[in-house]
Image (tube, rainbow, N blue to C red; front, side, top):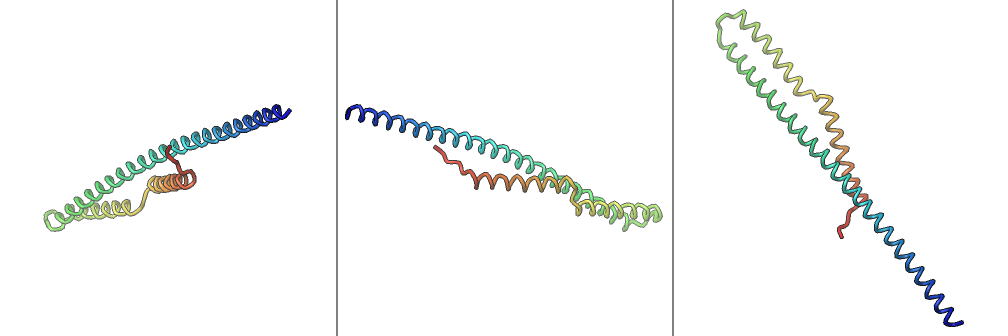
Length: 141
């Protein structure tokens, strides 16, 4: 009976160890799946940030182009103001150019709704990346 008791205890202990190993393996698998989802989410957010960066660069180029157009028109206006020939026609052109310059300056100073939306989306993506990095640090094996 002592041998049976020892054998029974060993079998119980072995089953208990197998359950612990299975539980630990399940936890490891779950952590791997969670890490993979986090990596996928980070990749997706990095892609969004990259797209936002491209949009930002495109907007900067557009602003530069508009600035160049404004400078061209200001130079033309200066030229027309110094040239006194056909004054009435030139005054009309000067007035129109002044209005155009004012309009362009207003457009440059006022952000578009798209720009504001892109900025908000960019900041949200940055916050999400930081949250993911803070909440689920990924350890390498």
